[in-house]
Image 1 (cartoon, helix red, strand yellow):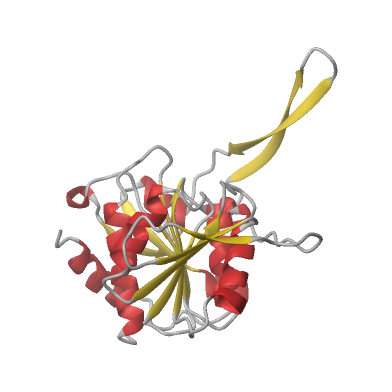
Image 2 (cartoon, rainbow, N blue to C red; image 1 turned 120 degrees about the vertical axis):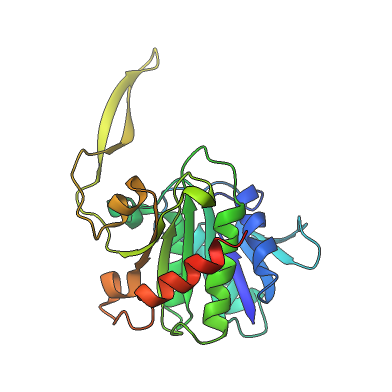
Length: 258
């Protein structure tokens, strides 16, 4: 199994390399990621200027790595179309430092990178943890378990998962829930400032107060569950076959075996 790993936090992000290290247990790993942070770039692609790529020094031995002067989507497109000569079997994006729940999913560069894999017929996974939480191990291990499920064909190949973990030790996580994205959870507003010469504006992402339903990703995280949202059903109206309560129980049993 050949796995492409990308992110929106940049080629040097520790979450990227924690993810790559775990996924090496499931297959051959190639990394292609932006050369700098590209958070909140969503599905942006670069169409009006050339893209430049450099081979990067991997932080893990045995991983081929590329640093892309572009967005997360650019990185995955280039990797799948030009940089990797052999077929890729899975695209995994993350581990993002900052949850991608509800409406935030729509501007997420982490999710955007995974979309480019899914649009090319590959299973895709986006993985996120809370901002400020620096323990990547559990999220990386869960991504490996999902990759192994896909490799063993226990999950369908036409799948696109958005995975978010709470800031809790494994012993305190209550389980895994299959969720829907919460709605009307975030909005962009504008702050004004003055730099001594002229007025400027600063866009600010704000979380809205809403009571999310029990089937949503935000409710799951707020109540100590891992959320897995099957985005092929939400964004592309594809069936949810294979990723169900039985799958969640199997995954969680394996996940708790630290």
